[in-house]
Image 1 (cartoon, rainbow, N blue to C red):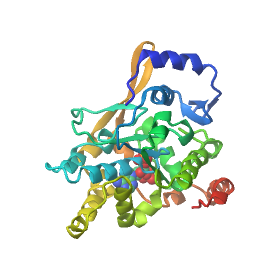
Image 2: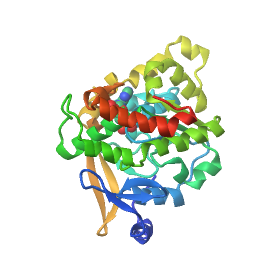
Image 3: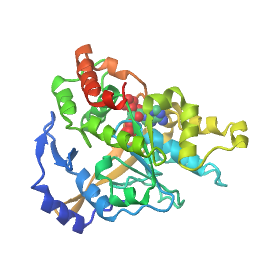
Image 4: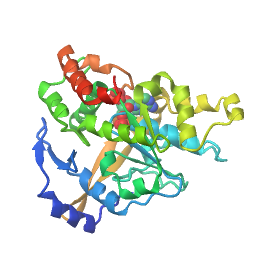
Length: 329
Ligand code: A3P
């Protein structure tokens, strides 16, 4: 996984001034790299991954647009892959945030926990399909992409930054400002535009269904048993009949459920440090409280934060950009 280093930092400095830039509704600077918008700190890690990332044999990459269920997918895949380990290491998820079990390839995130000594071939990324490292594409490794109703994704993204900036929860029923929605619609959101990010993976999954599994958050929530079994099968760790009889599928689902995960001490009060590249010759870091990854975990919470007109605006873009590819919400 990415470690801030000077070589990449220099490369970043070279291309930085050539990137188109815009400000979002909070005056945060976004940079367009290979057709997608990022806050500056996403880019050095993406450059690093494109140059240096080497998948292990049997590597599975968990990809997502931020706020579409990355934390949940990581927990499920990790629990599936480690379920037969002798010392019940799925218990690791009881004391570690799933981001501390499955690293991002383009970010360095660390906690106070010792580094994981297990060799689990799982990594994750928010990098759009067309910018993935060539090594990932050429190795043919399996990719699981999770996506979500853009309206809920938008609300969840808004909450994430609201909480990061104000340290407070998004008040129930507070309608989000129009100019923030405008930025989301224009694609000014990490790894946005949302719809283009989704389409990259969706089209690739239609071309190579054996290599890319596309999961909707809503399907995972509504038909959890079916999708968890499918996920296990796809990543090469299918459940045996004996395991099914013993209730192993349900055990994993319960362990990774929002209720269980969000109430764990580590996820309520723990924190992680995110290293954001090099600034003035020092590694720039921010601390993220683990509870920022757990808010409500519901389908349709957008109804509390968007007016019907705002929802229609998002739905129209979804219809226009995705319907012809057979994707709807
Ligand atoms: P909400 O903000 O709608 O509650 P990501 O993990 O990609 O950052 O996405 C975060 C979203 O997933 C948040 O959505 C969060 O509450 C939800 N989430 C986190 N853990 C979950 C779980 N175990 N089951 C279902 N949803 C979960």
